Every structure is written in C-alpha cells, then in structure tokens.
Image (cartoon, rainbow, N blue to C red; front, side, top):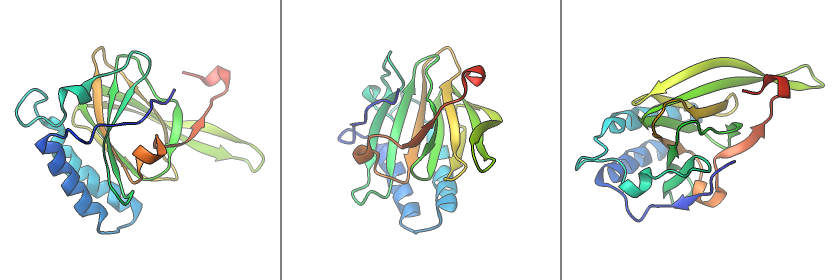
Length: 193
C-alpha cells in the first residue's frame, strides 16, 4: 500500500528551509540525474543528525507522526516548476514498501532509527523477466543513498523496534503525482519475503 500525499509545506523548520535552498542550488545547475542525486545527497547528509527535539530540528513534531496502517508520507516541499520534492517518510516498526522503482532520481537519508533495503535487478531472457536480489543494505541514522533510473528497483522497510524517519528528495513533483513510485514489482510466491 502506498500512502497518500499530504503537503505540509506551510510549516517548515528553519533547517528544512535552508536544506531546500541548498537542494535548489544543485538542481538548478541542470546536471545529469546521477550527478544531481549524488550532489543532493551530499547536501542532505549534514542535516540528518539534527537534534529532533532541539531548536535546530529538521522536522516539526507533526511531520514525525506515523500511521498504523502503512508508512506515512509527508510532502514537505514541491518546487513550483516540478524540479524536485522533499518528503519525510515515517515508518512504524515492520512497515515497508512494495518492491518498486521510481519516476526520477532519488536521494534518501535516514534521520531516525534504521531502515533496511533490499535491492533488485530485472533480468530478461527476451521472453520473460524476473527479479534477482543483488544486495541487502542496513541504513542507520545518517546513512544516505542516491540513485537514478534505470537500476533503482528496491524494497525499503523499518528494521528497528522504534519509529524510523527518512528524508527523501525526488526529481519530480510528488505533490502532483501522489507518489514517486513508477512501477510495483511482484515476486513469485516462493520468493516473497
């Protein structure tokens, strides 16, 4: 289940406003997607360690609220020209995404807790295609991952016993699209996790 997009941009912290300005400066350079994602990741990383309860917090308390039904998506900012969006994803223990890929480049940074990611590659013999697991990655707070299609197929889950929060930056207008997910993939029943 993919959470609905709700825009929380009217109440941004000073730190989030500064981060958005840094991201805008990178995106406005018009670089290739892979390089844009890498450079946005460099800008995001220092902000992930902000004290969540301190005066320099990255998110407001409302932007840290989860949903018991599925991970929650708080759209914090969508650039007017659709160039990028900033989203906070709040994951309660055990919540996860489906296996999916994205409509654009993406940067994800773990702000609190720990997330686990399983990465896949789509292998085709010309008639059929199947997913092959390529990597399992544990992402503690402060971890940043940057990628661009193709080759961005993964599943993400909260792998800790507390709430996990991650900040995602997408090269698309998530407030308009509703999600960054391009396609959801299904494993055969004998391969499901």
